[in-house]
Amino acid sequence: MSTIGANSPDSGDGRATLTLDADDRHLNAAGTIHGGLLATLVDATMGAAIRGAVEGESPVTSQLTLTYLHPGEPGRLVVTAQVRKRGDSLVVCEADVEQDGKSLVHALATFALLKN
Image 1 (tube, one colour):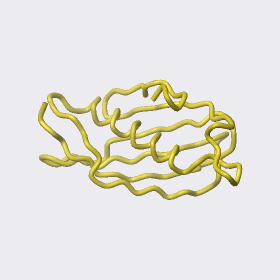
Image 2 (cartoon, rainbow, N blue to C red):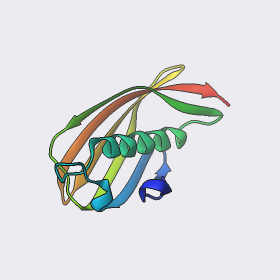
Image 3 (tube, rainbow, N blue to C red):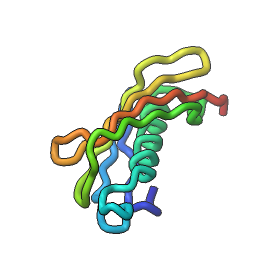
Image 4 (cartoon, one colour):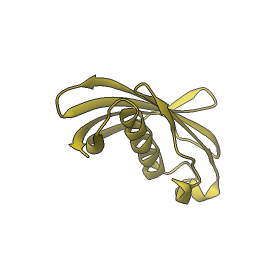
């Protein structure tokens, strides 16, 4: 995560939070936060939430859907994730990205659990 300027997410009990101070290097040609960056942030934060809820297994993204609600701009991004459902080998997780109290992204993902 350090290559994009983010610290590792804080996680525990199936939840995780990550913050990033977005700057000009995180913008697309339209001058808003790049959608690929937002996808990376939610994927990493959801993975951390799952790792905080399982032992002896590693989550790998199987399916990821993002709904982009509002464009982001330079400034603090807050990503939160929470495990919603767990099966024998799959976990469903949700995440949100907010900036200044406004929702930028809602994400839903399915992760496969691999035995360590």
